[in-house]
Amino acid sequence: MRAGNLFIYGGIALIAIGVMVRFGWFSWFGRLPGDIRSEGENVSFFFPITSMIVVSIAATILLNVFDRFFRS
Image (cartoon, rainbow, N blue to C red; front, side, top):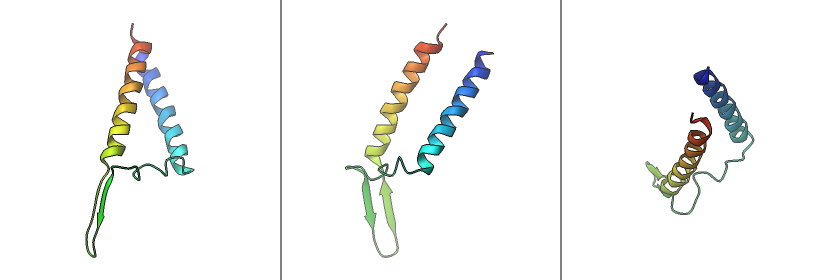
């Protein structure tokens, strides 16, 4: 039953994130200072290093909160 609840909460979280992306709440993502973008005539390069750091910090915080909440 614990795994079932985890799938339900994960699905709700994915739906919420999808709605936020759909309505443009994350339009700043990928345009942070420190994201590397280079565009030429025939080639473009994009390396979102700052955005990846933000995602990593947010995921670490969320996973730690969920771990403390669901720990038996």
